[in-house]
Length: 176
Image (tube, rainbow, N blue to C red; front, top):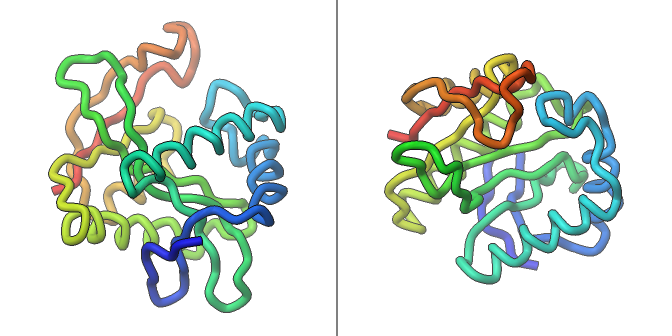
C-alpha cells in the first residue's frame, strides 16, 4: 500500500483490504449519496467502482486515494483524480473528486485533502488541466472547489442525468 500525500491531519494512500467494509458502508449512506442519481450503491456496485479506481491507479500511477486521519488511522473517505468523458463541448478529461463520511463533515478535511491533491497534481504529476463538477444543489462541494482556489467555468446540463431531474444542472470549476 503506497502513501501518496500527507497533510497536517491526513494521509492519502492506496487501498487496503480493510478499507472495503468502510467503502461499502459509505456508498450505502443516503446522506453521502444525496447528490447522486442513485442514493445508495449496492455492495456489488461499490466493488465494481473500487475495481475501476484500482485500475486507474495501476494504469496512470495516480487516481483516487483513501483519506485516513493521522490521529487514529480511521478511514474517512476518498479523494483524488478520475479520468472521465462528459461528452459536452470542450469536455475535460481529469477531475478531482471526493467523498467523505458524515462524521467527518464540517472539519475541513475535504478542503485540506483536495488542496494537497491539487498541489501534488501540479508539482509531482505535472498535470495541467484539473476540473471538478457537481450538481447545483451541492453547495458544500462547490464551496470546497472555491476554497481550494478553483475557478468557476460554467453551468451545464449533465448528459447522464434526465432533464427533468433536480440534479440535471451542474457547475464546472477548473484548477488554476
